[in-house]
Image (cartoon, rainbow, N blue to C red; front, side):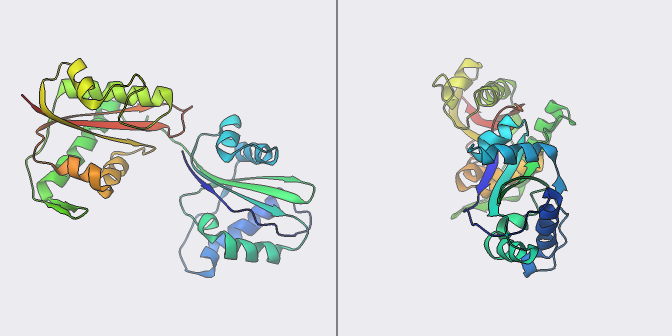
Length: 274
């Protein structure tokens, strides 16, 4: 999952209850740190994040703390403060030092642990797997969005691509994509080289696809077709693969692992047959 690590700043406050600290955080968040009038939903108190905050206090990393607390975080951040002064001082510090975290609309839940004169604050967004949609339908949506992009043409970095023909779904390439997506999910990594050392062309060969050219896009953490296609289009290299007229066929797949860092792993393999 994506994580944000905050520089530690020590602020003094009187011994607050966790709910009081959360109220201060939410007041700063509601005001968008005094920088804008955006409407942002308040952070919800989450016991699992209280547990993660306690583990942070024990010296764990944020990643390990959320994992040990069995909180599947899609995005997370942490802040540590001393608790010896007033609410106004805490609000001022959050506004001045941690605005990017506190006012991040992607973060939706909060947990707090207090010990002695210190408090550990964890803000996070839970990972929600895309299991409400049939996997085949979700993969079909990805291909549909990709072909819409190919039909319109676009610029990928400095390179301009004209509109081109849509990609055809290919069962062998889909199998190769599924194999790699499952490998990444099960072994908790993101990359083009498989855990066995396999590369995209070798996986296409193993699936029975005879190719003259082959390429691959991978991504992780996205839970909708729109998110993953948007991620690829925003990345120059992935966008070039997606828009390339050299490819005529493709296979799309994703795999889910709640125990992994990213949760959802995506693969699209592009090919042109011999």
